[in-house]
Image 1: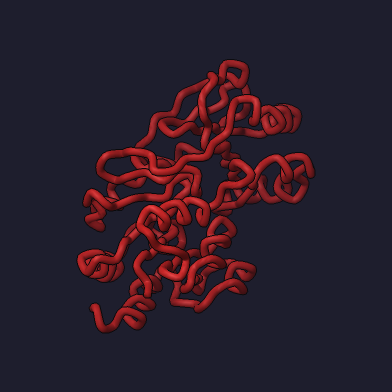
Image 2: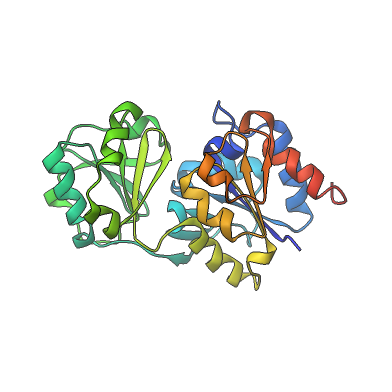
Length: 268
């Protein structure tokens, strides 16, 4: 029986205007009121998506969010960390060396802010990520703390050849995923949304047989594969669609709501 619905945001729950439609909101609120856990799964920190959490009413003591693509599971109310898995400053050195050699912009995130490397070209990350502090920092001045991920945020036509030519060392050192056409994320090697969801399911005394997940992109693949109901949007990537239990309508056609209305017809 499905007890948890995990939702990617961009190009999945959010339409092309980066909004949760009225239909998606209505259906998810209803399911949440029926005792089903609705869990947003994102690469962003929780404060960057707080308006979406409030819109869906996910503000009860047992509401959680999967952030940093699975690197942090955080309670929406208390902000306590249920699970976290990050990187040290030393872990970032191979990536820092590469972007310096290739003159590529890079942003590095801990769990609270973004460190925009001021000794590299400027990225476009500020146009993508809102409601979080950006701090100019030289790569040599990064402090000793736990970092959640590093991000290349540059126009898609410039990012594509970089991804195609990533050194093997970086692919082995990090879990590198493209979350949007203009964003490449470098995560700890064992981090993905499935890992965060596994920790949350265990907290609820549930397992993947109780999970329905919705996604569209490479960074959703593991949670699509693991879920009893792994649903991919019509606008999803071909490789992700291959792993799907079912394909639903696109993100601009309320694909989340349309699938849930059929699957949970007795609850709605």
